[in-house]
Image 1 (tube, helix red, strand yellow):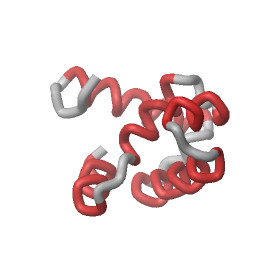
Image 2: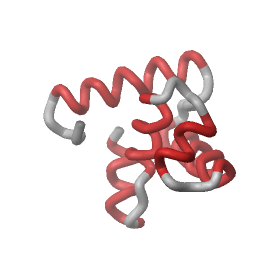
Image 3: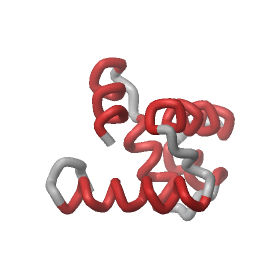
Image 4: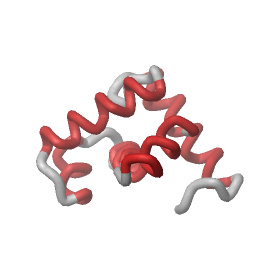
Length: 82
């Protein structure tokens, strides 16, 4: 999560929120984009940025599992907001 936190802080973006919303909606592209108030293509772009920064593909099974666990661990540790 470190690279996402740093990128968001340095560029005033919301990649971490995007990731959390995407995962919370079981990878549902339309639902996640709607809840974020962005176009679906913007979501695609953000998820590609997340992949570049973490080396994990959010839409793949292994990427989803690893990123979900990281988000949950960050929340449990008080590093990430609920």
